Image 1 (tube, helix red, strand yellow):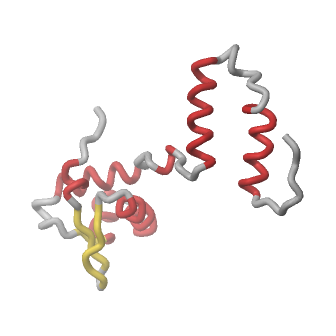
Image 2 (tube, rainbow, N blue to C red):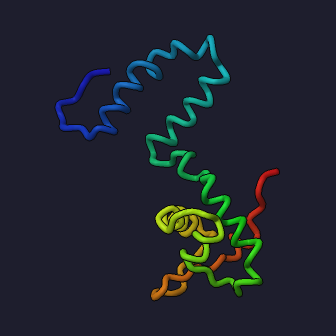
Length: 131
């Protein structure tokens, strides 16, 4: 692969090197065909900004969503960070990070400002945890 004379971002440089070392030569394809296919699929998602890890629910997010589901009726589907942090014995900062991801993934919505309040969406209410 010939190097172009352009300024690259760190991600572009990383992609260039990995493709040159791993995917251009296909050196692993014969010895590890299954793993190679999985890696190649992940690689395409990574290059296109669709990393599977961004789709996966975090452990804290799962605990938080599960607790919200269990308490949705009791709390009238209105939750504050303080209530959640106290119930789960964690910090408000930890709750805030988990809530951002749950909101982004469509499981929770922000409904109030002072104090900040959250509620489960239909997707959040019906989310099934793997057993």
